[in-house]
Image (cartoon, rainbow, N blue to C red):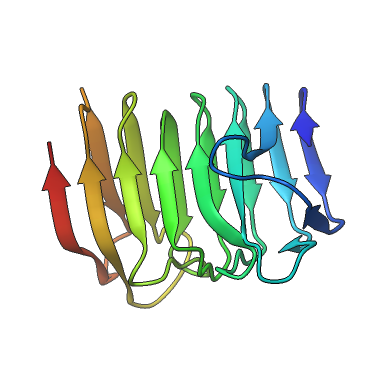
Length: 171
């Protein structure tokens, strides 16, 4: 699935028939924004898949990615990947660009691993445009051979927003 230009939406289901650690399923955006609103699930029960988003364009996924369907999410390319679903996939690696988690509707499981280990990258926990207090605990943050990593917790005035990591490893 690839967005060449402009803003486009994929509302249909995505059935993950392949995608492992060596050859993850590719979702790309060369420019503009690809909005994914349909379900993402594995076509083989009990076999969660690896998914890699990439490109200079942005990708927004509002559907929930469960640990039964997605084992590992990779973020590559200079664009931004925005997650706004209640996700339970166990691991996310930012290889380049920005990963944004929308606090109003998006979440990652408290046991998840967030890693940075190839190029510069950023993680933004964003509560702008939403009301009320939000919090997100991430199991571990791992930074390996990283020239620059930015972690941002973004909110508007009068909002309580908490972002915490149970463990941090920098090597």
